Image (tube, rainbow, N blue to C red):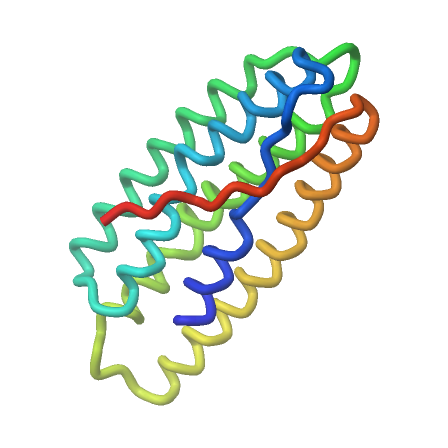
Length: 168
């Protein structure tokens, strides 16, 4: 499960734009701000896999779903920027992947993770689930990054990488 945690920490160091085009930068930054509100809780959730209890994981999962739902609702209200909705749509797809995986896959993973004396078969199931989710996350993160880079190029923005804040 450490691979999953490390992947998430690296993946979410997404870029925020500086202002050559202030309106485009503000639009980009509003979307990234919503990601940055959620991402530390995603990282915390994955770090809890190492030593957390089933109850802790289930509580964090429920909290994370609420946070993601709130971000989806907010970003869904954003209008296209000068006819360009690609960045918003890519962000919504990103949020929805996490929401969907939390709702559909993570209950089973939490069951497996919370059993600290799991069998080799359960270890294998857990590794298989983690690999599947990591692959989906990598593809969607690359798609979001590409959408952001293309948005920046179309609107003459410079992208600067900012680290994700850590929470306890």
